[in-house]
Image 1 (cartoon, helix red, strand yellow):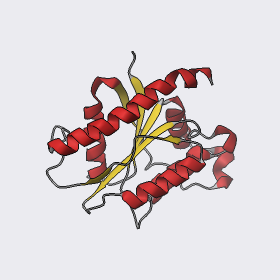
Image 2: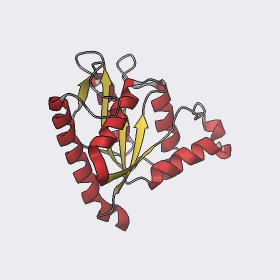
Image 3: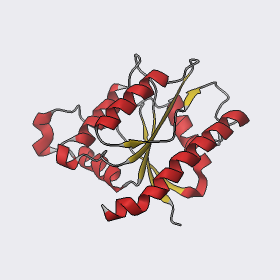
Length: 188
């Protein structure tokens, strides 16, 4: 079967983001099952309905890339027990206007990492709520990652075997659902 077209969004605009490192490691773990494309969100203007008629090229690029994707992987930090502003801004651009909401019927998996013991649990719950309201199908179960400096090696391999196995099973569930949804999306 063809590789799944996977859009990857990192909810951080930090150059050395641990979530970007985790996202690259997840793509590596997915292997040849996916054709992954990292979707840039840090260049989007702050959402304002007044800008709708004259969307910027960056907004057009972002929404087109998401519309084309068969599945979306979001790897995000947690900011103040919620989602980062840069990610919420991207979600808002993708949801407007309502009749062109690119999140509707998309298969999405959410994870994230932080140095803390509960990873990004609260932020992920908030993100599930927002994406669910927009009609996305959030799957894969919960994956909260407590990020330690040696978790991801320089070659984007997850160094900790137990974490690699857990995330591998989590990815298997997500990619399995996304693959099974392909025929349904083709009909829609």
